[in-house]
Length: 114
Length: 111
Image (tube, rainbow over all chains, first blue to last red; front, top):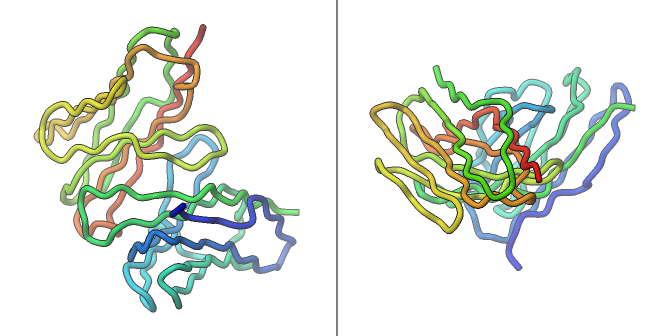
């Protein structure tokens, strides 16, 4: 079945360590997104990509990096510069430029600090 | 700037009707989405409105007034499984760049 797969489901980071969250989709969507969700809050956009080899910063990009080498994949790296990384991270994809097409979400990765 | 407001929490009884409101101020408007999110899970799409009026989908309906920057999600015949957070999201100009989520409304359905 088509969908978005995020891994791992749970991830722990040590001080000063970079960690990478995986996001893969087989929906043939052009656009992909990364959101951060803190307890009791809405989703905040970290990065998004509308096409392969291109991506744009969202509202809270500092301390994060992404790549988009393949249409299917949009990994997110949480660097040591992100001082408060504990959160629920959601990856999404959508058909590019279609106003009535919703975003489809993966099951999320919960990141915690050791 | 862009801003979306929703009530933080609501409580309703099984079998009842509940209305969750959403007000928004965004740069441009290309549609409003409602999502349901159970705790610790991914949001799932419920409805989409781009024109004024009511869209009905089974037990769920969504209303939009563009002139008032206002939408609501109406849930009928509430069931225990409807206990979840409900997220309002607006697609502004430039689509993905301006896809803004509200803080969500946590709905508790009581027996």
